[in-house]
Length: 439
Image (cartoon, rainbow, N blue to C red; front, side):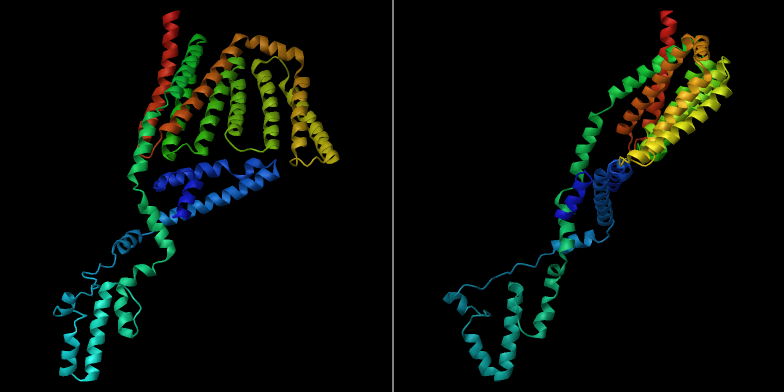
């Protein structure tokens, strides 16, 4: 019982939880304690490895425990206790001694000895005493017949201690009690706050799109992305890391496309959409430090080059070539610094930082300050509108993911899907309706 309870405590769930709840808790803890998240710290990585090993063991033991078909047979064997003796026959009064058929009667042995020979009398007396003593309880008796008759009453004693612990753990607490507590907590913690934030964020986006007279494809892109990741959440059945990855990648791609289109047209929108998707992937994954630095370097170059190409205010090819050349120089300097200092940090981190600094400096130098100022002047206030629209979309997606994580359940997946889709649609409609009412 102590071992099974310890496994429940390791997975941070209550005893009596269902198999689906055990799997969900295992996925969450395996994601939190994955050793790759602590690649920069050897001590924490070793601790995470030990914790993950403990989590895996607890999960395997609980799944094995719940999948055993012999729990009911164990329960029946434990419930079948040896029958209590009808009469202990411990009184030594004269009345009981004189009763006919009593074991302690003084007249019966004499009569038996007179009627039967001595050997037959002793064997009959031995069988009679053995049968009566079996009714009192299991005692050690010599002879094979006694051992054979004592086997049925000793079956429950031959059960292993492991089975006793499993039975006592499974049936010590009824499974209905914890489920009722969890269901009441589920309905009492309806995520009104995240849903309100999501409605407000999408209302801001709808307001900006209406004021800036955005084309119809922007509205369609937002709704399509919302339907897509909500469908992924419904298919997964829980807010897994893959659902968060899809949500943030789609939010970054849509927000970047809208902001880039407002700033410099379709070319800038495509470039910034790719940047947003990459940043969303980083935000929802356990990427290493050098990978984050490399992605930020590429994102900076694509941002500048896409703005130049979209507005036509400078030579974007020159800016791209300069960014690549400066990135190589920065990478070389970073690796040299890493080899010279040998600080014991992650391999390649200094090189990735040098790559980022060089790429950003090369893109800005290749484009020129005059071309960048001209591009920002052409974009004007639309850049601000696009940035706020992107912020509204990303904030709305994150808020709805938090709400979906609280609401999603094996029996309420479709309900969660409809609620999340209706929240974004209502927010966009509310923003457009407010523009019509105020202006």
